[in-house]
Image (cartoon, rainbow, N blue to C red; front, top):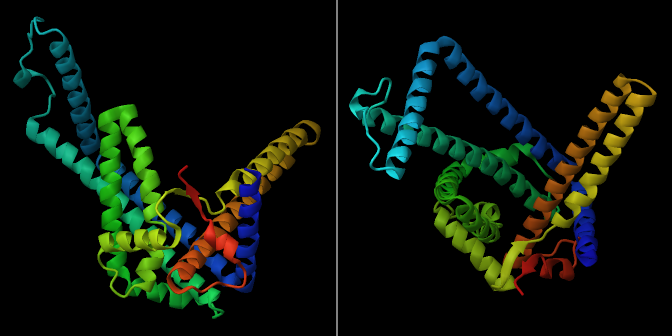
Length: 327
C-alpha cells in the first residue's frame, strides 16, 4: 500500500510539472464545470416553469403514479392470497390508469432518463476530447490553445454523439439490471463497471487519434487492444493516482471541521463560516488538480503504448505498471 501511495505521488508530481508548463490546461475543467452547472440550471428552471404553468398536468401525473402504485399493491395482495375476494373490479377502480396510460408514463420516464444519460455523456465527452487533444499537444511540447481544442471537439461531434449513444445505452441497461435484480444486480453491475472502466480508459484518446472513430464499438475494441498489447490481459482496474484522493482530501476535511468548530466556539460564527468556505475551496482545487493530473497521465500512457513516445516528466517504470493486476 505504501508503495502505491509513493507511486501515485510521483505520478501526481510529474503530471503537475507538465501542467506547470501548460497552465492553460486548467481552464478546461473550469469551463466544463461552469457549463455543466449552467445546463443544470437551465433544465431545472425549465422544469420549474412547467410545474408553475401547468399545475393540473403535474397533479394528473401524480394521481396516475399513485394509482399505479396502488394497483401494484393490490396485485401483490391478491397474488399472495388467491382466495381473497376481489370485490373491486380493475376497470372500476377510481383514478386507476388504463394500460395505455401506464405504458405511456413508463415510456416517458425511460425517454427522459435516456435523454439525460445521453446529454451528460455527450457533454462530458465533448469537453474531454477538447481537453485531451490539448494535453497531447502539450506533451509534445506544443503550445496549448483553448480555441483549437474546442474546434477539434466540434469536428469530432459525430464520434462524440455515437459514443454518448453507447454510454447512455450501457447506463440504462445497468440501471435496469440493478432495479430488477436488487443486491445481485448491484453486485453484477460492480464487476461489469470495473471491466468497462478498464477497457474504455483510452476511449477518448482513441476518438482523438484515430481518423475512423465514428463506431463506438470499434473504439472500445481499440482501447482494449492497446491495453492488451502493452500491459497484458490480467488487469482488474486502473490505478493512476487513486491512492492519493483520500490522503489529500480527508486531512482538508478534518482540518476544516476542527478549525471551524474552534472558531465558532472561541471567536464567532462568521469566522467559522469563512473557514468552512475556504475548506470547500481547497477541496475543489485539490480535486481539480487530481483530475487534471490523472488525465495527463492517461494521455501519456496512450502515447507511450501507441507510439513509444515518453515525455520527459515520466520514466519507464511509471509507464509499465499503471494497472491493478489480478492475482
